Length: 375
Image: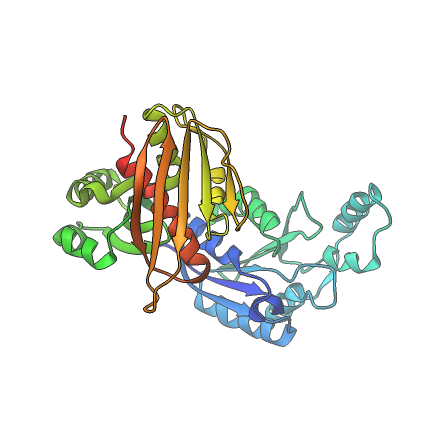
């Protein structure tokens, strides 16, 4: 039985909507990969009474409690105090931590006295080093349960989890890693995917779970198991065959990279973009695409904001414009390409609103490239 975990995201700024909790999404993925069941996520204010009570409840309900945030040096960073109160352990200065902190600040100037709060720990806490920040983490293994404190700064938290926490979890618990294969589609809805796959989705096999998820880059089909992963490749292959041309990639593929590869195969060594009314969504996706052998190299793009502008010189130029929504809130995009490859102007319908609408317009353009640009 894989361990049950609860995640506490601590910080009043989360509850006020001032900060988006990207840490929870990252930890959810990483825990699933390791074989830990994340049973829930709670966001807490900077209130030591609430933090302490929640630690007590969470530790009683789960094998593992992970908390992010509230480890800074200021008066409202109260995660250490909250866990100390929940466990009934005193906080005291750790001389080694204090010396390390003074050395760290010695290279950049005087250390504020408030930072000494970050050198406090309880007797049962093992310190987790933080090489890129001033807030060390805690690993507390007590009363058959583990509690982990990590910084709220995403870069610090991710590095600490990768370098300090993941290996400790694998050593502490009997983990069955989650194996996943993903089939990615565009231009087809969730209900249509479910209807086309039928029993393959409803009865994928013993120990295998199948799910459908709507994303900005289309509908993803996900097969997963904590057992023998050998059956997943066959399931993904059968799903791809049944879904046909709607499938644009698998697993870690991204649609921008697939489109640039299609342009490269068609003879374009370089690519550029021109877009209108999309807020640069297409430029952003193409710029973030991972380089691949044989793919067209993206040179950059132009945003049409009402003035005269010329597209960057490239072998292929992808053109995208977002048509204003109609009275029913429906959207259409116009897509074309020119240069050594040619793609006649066509219109595609998309769904969504706000920033999601802009990203889906860009993905629709990339999907038209991968479908219609041929060698």
